[in-house]
Length: 403
Image 1 (tube, rainbow, N blue to C red):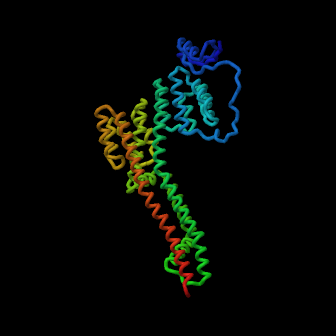
Image 2 (cartoon, one colour; image 1 turned 30 degrees about the horizontal axis):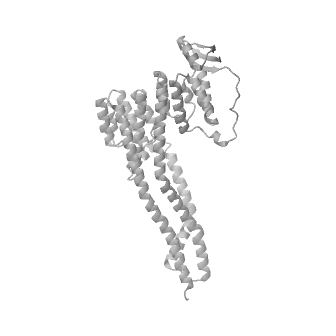
Image 3 (cartoon, rainbow, N blue to C red; image 1 turned 90 degrees about the horizontal axis):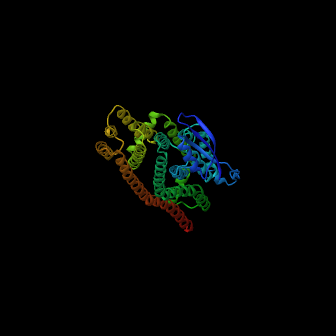
């Protein structure tokens, strides 16, 4: 019968350790719980080979990603429901993970063994966002850590699938745009100068379309560095201005007002608000704390300010729906549905429905934009290439004519 070393805490919070002989770790855990001890760790005492050496495969050293968190949270939830202590669950999860992920879970296990909570251990790693940390904190406080970890895993999966849909919709138009820019640069910097040299040698008068092409090429050649510097300076200025709260606030407000990108930004912010708030409320987080967490998660600072205003009013006993619908920002339907949810006591369900509804609207908007971009970009690329070849062929015919 194997022997196990255990670490536990008594009802006063004092840590105890020792060894027990049993058939399984579950039997040790059950025996210790019968003694009113909180089990922290149960480890079998045996000599075993350490397979955790430094791997040479570079893929093993990739940073921990949300998809790793999604998978491992589900495994942790299953093991916790089976009665395993959190430290054992973390060690088993680490043993089946690649090197970089294993280091994260091993570090978390060491901190918990030193007396920290799981939330404090996770806060050390940037891959766990504020939403996840808030859920885990409530799970530890309420004793529903297995449910919370499983719920967090499902939310991460839903978010990943939605992002994949968006990326898939934008992949082809993005590729075509990059290709169009590459073709234009290649034509103006390589093909057109050669045509210009050839026509200057034969001494023929240039046709108007060919002359226009050469004039465009000369203009880009003369002003290209200035345009590039101006573009870099503009991008740098935008990033610099976004570092200041007041300018970022107004820039995000202008983004919401744009004809095509504005509705997309509004729907994206609405999805983030509804998903985050609904997830936190379902996990047991109080609404004021949930709003504070969601405020930090929103990328658009104008929408985040609307959530901050709602949080302040909720703190003084007012409803959530009124400040959300007071000013421009979130769609009017959200305000109306929040009123229904507050009056009927079904706010969590309403937020879940609003998440799915606005995710669908956002995906459709992006697909529509991508569908419009594809023919437009194709026409632009075809126009550039056709213009260059037409100018070249007309020049060839002119060169072959009589002087």
